[in-house]
Image 1: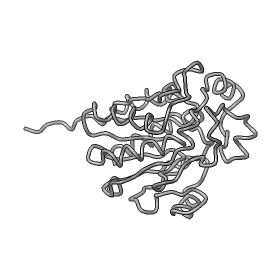
Image 2 (image 1 turned 180 degrees about the vertical axis):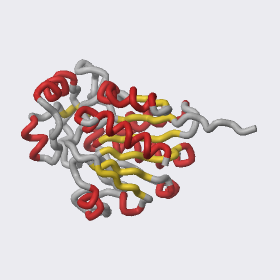
Image 3 (image 1 turned 60 degrees about the vertical axis):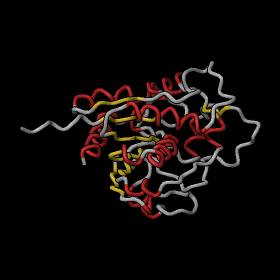
Image 4 (image 1 turned 90 degrees about the vertical axis):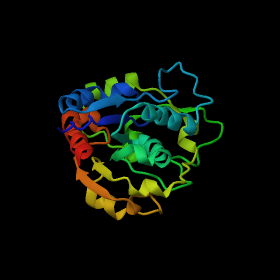
Length: 240
Protein backbone atom coordinates (compact mmCIF):
# COMPACT_ATOMS: atom_id res chain seq x y z
CA UNK A 1 0.00 0.00 0.00
CA UNK A 2 1.42 3.38 -0.97
CA UNK A 3 0.81 6.75 0.63
CA UNK A 4 0.09 9.74 -1.58
CA UNK A 5 2.68 12.46 -1.43
CA UNK A 6 1.71 15.31 0.89
CA UNK A 7 0.55 18.47 -0.90
CA UNK A 8 3.22 21.09 -1.42
CA UNK A 9 2.84 24.23 0.66
CA UNK A 10 3.79 27.35 -1.29
CA UNK A 11 4.58 30.50 0.71
CA UNK A 12 4.30 33.65 -1.43
CA UNK A 13 6.24 36.67 -0.17
CA UNK A 14 5.67 39.92 -2.10
CA UNK A 15 8.12 42.71 -2.73
CA UNK A 16 8.05 46.31 -1.55
CA UNK A 17 4.71 48.14 -1.15
CA UNK A 18 2.67 44.96 -1.56
CA UNK A 19 0.59 42.72 0.67
CA UNK A 20 -0.91 39.28 0.22
CA UNK A 21 -3.40 40.85 -2.21
CA UNK A 22 -0.63 41.07 -4.83
CA UNK A 23 -0.94 37.29 -5.33
CA UNK A 24 -4.74 37.25 -5.74
CA UNK A 25 -4.58 36.18 -9.40
CA UNK A 26 -1.86 33.59 -8.70
CA UNK A 27 -3.27 31.64 -5.76
CA UNK A 28 -6.28 30.29 -7.71
CA UNK A 29 -4.18 28.66 -10.45
CA UNK A 30 -1.82 27.27 -7.82
CA UNK A 31 -4.72 25.64 -5.97
CA UNK A 32 -6.04 24.29 -9.27
CA UNK A 33 -2.60 22.74 -9.82
CA UNK A 34 -2.89 20.88 -6.51
CA UNK A 35 -0.64 23.12 -4.44
CA UNK A 36 -1.51 24.87 -1.17
CA UNK A 37 -0.65 28.59 -1.45
CA UNK A 38 -0.10 30.93 1.49
CA UNK A 39 0.13 34.59 0.48
CA UNK A 40 1.87 36.76 3.08
CA UNK A 41 1.38 40.33 4.22
CA UNK A 42 4.57 41.33 6.02
CA UNK A 43 4.54 43.47 9.19
CA UNK A 44 3.96 47.16 8.48
CA UNK A 45 2.34 46.45 5.12
CA UNK A 46 -1.15 45.83 6.49
CA UNK A 47 -2.38 49.35 5.72
CA UNK A 48 -1.17 52.88 5.15
CA UNK A 49 -2.08 53.58 8.79
CA UNK A 50 0.22 50.90 10.22
CA UNK A 51 3.08 52.05 12.45
CA UNK A 52 6.25 51.27 10.48
CA UNK A 53 8.72 53.20 12.64
CA UNK A 54 10.01 50.16 14.55
CA UNK A 55 9.58 47.42 11.92
CA UNK A 56 12.88 45.67 11.24
CA UNK A 57 14.19 43.11 8.76
CA UNK A 58 14.11 40.59 11.62
CA UNK A 59 10.36 41.22 12.00
CA UNK A 60 9.77 40.32 8.35
CA UNK A 61 11.97 37.26 8.60
CA UNK A 62 10.22 36.14 11.79
CA UNK A 63 6.77 36.44 10.21
CA UNK A 64 7.72 34.13 7.35
CA UNK A 65 9.77 31.76 9.49
CA UNK A 66 6.93 31.26 11.99
CA UNK A 67 4.52 30.53 9.14
CA UNK A 68 6.91 27.94 7.69
CA UNK A 69 7.34 26.34 11.11
CA UNK A 70 3.55 25.88 11.37
CA UNK A 71 3.16 24.29 7.95
CA UNK A 72 3.58 20.62 7.10
CA UNK A 73 6.39 19.81 4.72
CA UNK A 74 7.20 20.00 1.88
CA UNK A 75 7.41 23.80 1.72
CA UNK A 76 8.40 25.94 -1.25
CA UNK A 77 9.30 29.58 -0.61
CA UNK A 78 8.59 32.20 -3.28
CA UNK A 79 10.11 35.67 -2.97
CA UNK A 80 9.33 38.51 -5.34
CA UNK A 81 11.69 41.50 -5.65
CA UNK A 82 12.61 42.69 -2.14
CA UNK A 83 10.85 39.66 -0.72
CA UNK A 84 13.74 37.58 -2.00
CA UNK A 85 15.99 38.91 0.75
CA UNK A 86 13.40 37.81 3.29
CA UNK A 87 12.94 34.25 2.04
CA UNK A 88 16.68 33.63 1.73
CA UNK A 89 17.18 34.26 5.44
CA UNK A 90 14.32 31.89 6.25
CA UNK A 91 16.05 29.23 4.16
CA UNK A 92 19.22 29.95 6.14
CA UNK A 93 17.31 29.49 9.40
CA UNK A 94 15.25 26.44 8.33
CA UNK A 95 17.15 24.70 5.52
CA UNK A 96 15.76 21.25 6.36
CA UNK A 97 12.14 22.40 5.94
CA UNK A 98 12.47 24.02 2.51
CA UNK A 99 12.04 21.93 -0.65
CA UNK A 100 12.90 24.73 -3.09
CA UNK A 101 13.19 28.51 -3.27
CA UNK A 102 11.70 30.45 -6.16
CA UNK A 103 12.97 33.98 -6.79
CA UNK A 104 10.65 36.08 -8.98
CA UNK A 105 12.65 38.89 -10.63
CA UNK A 106 14.79 38.70 -7.53
CA UNK A 107 17.65 36.82 -5.92
CA UNK A 108 19.45 36.15 -2.65
CA UNK A 109 21.87 38.74 -1.32
CA UNK A 110 25.27 37.82 0.08
CA UNK A 111 25.79 37.95 3.83
CA UNK A 112 26.04 41.53 5.05
CA UNK A 113 24.48 43.12 1.96
CA UNK A 114 21.43 45.39 2.11
CA UNK A 115 18.96 46.48 -0.54
CA UNK A 116 19.30 50.20 0.24
CA UNK A 117 22.34 50.55 2.53
CA UNK A 118 22.62 54.30 1.98
CA UNK A 119 19.07 55.06 3.05
CA UNK A 120 19.18 57.79 5.74
CA UNK A 121 18.62 56.62 9.30
CA UNK A 122 15.93 59.27 9.61
CA UNK A 123 13.74 57.61 6.99
CA UNK A 124 10.75 55.80 8.50
CA UNK A 125 9.21 54.43 5.34
CA UNK A 126 9.45 54.48 1.56
CA UNK A 127 6.30 55.46 -0.36
CA UNK A 128 5.74 54.01 -3.82
CA UNK A 129 7.77 56.22 -6.21
CA UNK A 130 6.37 57.59 -9.47
CA UNK A 131 6.37 55.13 -12.36
CA UNK A 132 9.08 56.97 -14.29
CA UNK A 133 11.36 56.79 -11.25
CA UNK A 134 10.69 53.07 -10.84
CA UNK A 135 11.47 52.49 -14.52
CA UNK A 136 14.67 54.52 -14.26
CA UNK A 137 15.80 52.35 -11.34
CA UNK A 138 15.22 49.12 -13.24
CA UNK A 139 11.69 48.17 -12.13
CA UNK A 140 9.93 47.83 -15.47
CA UNK A 141 6.17 48.32 -15.55
CA UNK A 142 5.88 46.44 -18.86
CA UNK A 143 2.59 44.57 -19.10
CA UNK A 144 0.70 46.89 -16.74
CA UNK A 145 -1.99 48.99 -18.39
CA UNK A 146 -3.27 52.25 -16.94
CA UNK A 147 -5.95 50.50 -14.88
CA UNK A 148 -3.45 48.07 -13.36
CA UNK A 149 -1.05 50.88 -12.50
CA UNK A 150 -3.85 52.88 -10.91
CA UNK A 151 -4.97 49.94 -8.76
CA UNK A 152 -1.37 49.18 -7.75
CA UNK A 153 -0.80 52.80 -6.69
CA UNK A 154 -4.11 52.95 -4.82
CA UNK A 155 -3.38 49.78 -2.82
CA UNK A 156 0.37 50.26 -2.29
CA UNK A 157 1.58 50.73 1.28
CA UNK A 158 4.85 52.50 2.18
CA UNK A 159 7.70 50.08 2.78
CA UNK A 160 9.29 50.08 6.27
CA UNK A 161 12.63 51.82 5.76
CA UNK A 162 14.61 49.73 8.22
CA UNK A 163 13.81 46.58 6.25
CA UNK A 164 15.28 48.19 3.14
CA UNK A 165 18.32 49.57 4.95
CA UNK A 166 19.33 46.69 7.22
CA UNK A 167 21.65 43.92 5.95
CA UNK A 168 20.86 40.24 5.70
CA UNK A 169 22.65 37.87 8.06
CA UNK A 170 23.41 34.34 6.87
CA UNK A 171 25.08 31.65 8.98
CA UNK A 172 24.16 28.12 7.84
CA UNK A 173 25.98 26.81 4.75
CA UNK A 174 23.23 24.18 4.31
CA UNK A 175 21.16 26.92 2.66
CA UNK A 176 23.42 26.44 -0.37
CA UNK A 177 22.09 22.88 -0.79
CA UNK A 178 18.46 24.00 -1.23
CA UNK A 179 17.64 24.10 -4.96
CA UNK A 180 16.58 27.40 -6.50
CA UNK A 181 14.48 28.50 -9.45
CA UNK A 182 15.00 32.04 -10.72
CA UNK A 183 12.02 33.28 -12.73
CA UNK A 184 13.42 36.07 -14.87
CA UNK A 185 10.84 38.61 -15.98
CA UNK A 186 12.32 42.07 -16.51
CA UNK A 187 15.91 40.82 -16.75
CA UNK A 188 16.57 37.91 -19.16
CA UNK A 189 18.17 34.77 -17.74
CA UNK A 190 21.26 35.10 -19.92
CA UNK A 191 21.87 38.57 -18.47
CA UNK A 192 21.20 37.50 -14.89
CA UNK A 193 23.66 34.63 -15.22
CA UNK A 194 26.43 37.12 -15.99
CA UNK A 195 25.54 39.00 -12.78
CA UNK A 196 25.28 35.95 -10.52
CA UNK A 197 28.32 36.76 -8.41
CA UNK A 198 28.96 38.36 -4.99
CA UNK A 199 29.98 41.77 -6.31
CA UNK A 200 28.06 44.74 -7.69
CA UNK A 201 25.57 45.52 -8.99
CA UNK A 202 23.39 42.77 -7.49
CA UNK A 203 25.59 41.35 -4.68
CA UNK A 204 23.85 38.03 -5.23
CA UNK A 205 24.59 34.55 -3.92
CA UNK A 206 23.07 32.89 -6.99
CA UNK A 207 26.46 31.78 -8.30
CA UNK A 208 26.91 29.51 -5.26
CA UNK A 209 23.51 27.81 -5.64
CA UNK A 210 21.94 25.07 -7.74
CA UNK A 211 19.82 27.35 -9.94
CA UNK A 212 17.31 26.63 -12.68
CA UNK A 213 16.77 29.78 -14.72
CA UNK A 214 13.37 30.37 -16.34
CA UNK A 215 12.46 33.23 -18.67
CA UNK A 216 9.01 34.79 -18.36
CA UNK A 217 9.33 38.03 -20.34
CA UNK A 218 7.28 40.89 -18.91
CA UNK A 219 7.89 43.65 -16.35
CA UNK A 220 8.88 43.55 -12.71
CA UNK A 221 5.40 42.59 -11.46
CA UNK A 222 4.41 39.36 -13.28
CA UNK A 223 1.72 38.60 -10.66
CA UNK A 224 -0.20 41.46 -12.29
CA UNK A 225 0.94 41.26 -15.91
CA UNK A 226 1.13 37.45 -16.41
CA UNK A 227 -0.41 35.82 -13.31
CA UNK A 228 -1.50 32.53 -14.88
CA UNK A 229 1.89 32.04 -16.54
CA UNK A 230 3.65 32.92 -13.30
CA UNK A 231 1.53 30.38 -11.43
CA UNK A 232 2.42 27.72 -14.01
CA UNK A 233 6.13 28.38 -13.56
CA UNK A 234 5.88 28.35 -9.76
CA UNK A 235 3.97 25.07 -9.90
CA UNK A 236 6.56 23.53 -12.22
CA UNK A 237 9.37 24.69 -9.94
CA UNK A 238 7.59 23.38 -6.83
CA UNK A 239 7.39 19.92 -8.35
CA UNK A 240 10.87 19.87 -9.86
